[in-house]
Amino acid sequence: MKKAKIICSVIIAVYAISMVVVNVLHSVRPGYEAAVEWMGYVFEESHENGPLVTYPGSKVILFNIQQQKHEYEMVMKTSSMQDVTVSGALNFNMCKGVAPRMYKEVGVDYKAVLITPILEGALNETVGKQSPEFIVSQPEMIREAVLYILKDQIEPTGLLHINDLRLFKPKFDEKFEEAIKDKVVAQQVAEKAKFETERVKQEALQMREKMEAEAYGLKLKSRALNNPLIVRYEYAKAMGKWEGKLPQTLVVGQNGTMPVLPIGK
Image (cartoon, rainbow, N blue to C red; front, side, top):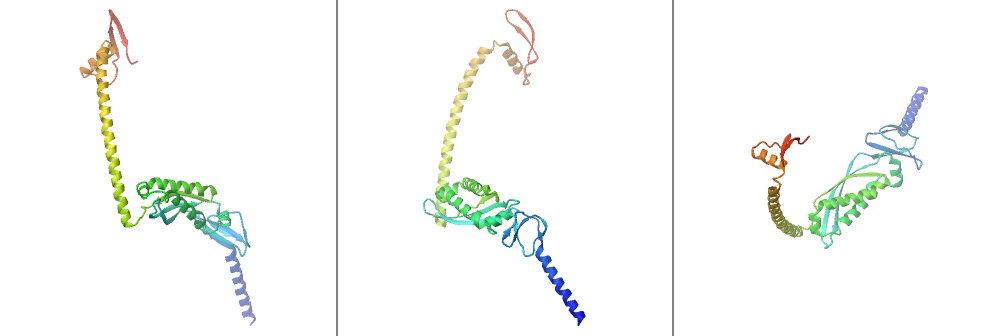
């Protein structure tokens, strides 16, 4: 009987010790940071990869600091009061060393507090105030604007870093989307026709200027034949001996003979 009591006491003691160990010994896996709360107090230190020993009864909150993807989808009105569905994916990561501050100031569900409302505001600002035609034809401009707003609003907090944003093709009512497509295509054709017309005009102008320049060049050339350097150049070119560099020596004859002059040295 006494032996049974001893065994029972040992089992209880082992269980009590194991419960204490479980409550004080924790592990932070790679790519995560931990904040520790004890009796309502959040410690300032952030804990990274490895073992973590805390007070009994402490609460350990893990935050993912790796790059994450936040997918979104919103329905809003355009400037012409048409419904448009905007969707995409935002790549971000939580800054290192801020787990305790994130837990105290924002909470565990920081996406709902920090990302979603600011993203919705950015989309309303850049998409909701535009025409359907603009939304369809300028996706990159919209994407850059939304990304800029997110960075400007979120990154100064020092809690999150915004990496990139994908903006998927906006969706309208099927019939309305076909109408937009036709209108955008028509505008593109008109712009292309305008561009081609301007290009032809510019080419014609350039050709005229070139012809005038060539005519002027011929006049200048006839006058410049008295220049001995040009004479030597023209002679070498005519004889197929011009190699793209000035001759090494030149005999100049003007009012009598002159000594050989070094050229290009």
